[in-house]
Image 1 (cartoon, rainbow, N blue to C red):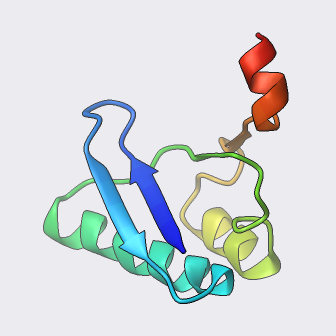
Image 2: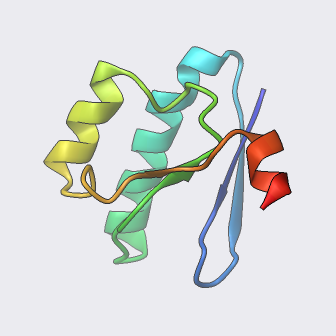
Length: 84
């Protein structure tokens, strides 16, 4: 599985290869730590295709802890998104 994360401001893209969909949280947590420590950047908001990778208790707790839980935006399913 391939997890693609895009910075909306710079359009910089990270491509993370995962063995399984349930590895998403660990990979995201590791990337967030790298961004904060090495790049002095902080995640402000998240958007997802609503595939379910980011919808679990661990991820929700992580978002609350890092103060971007309330700013999470879920995109509509691809078919609805293309209609607009």
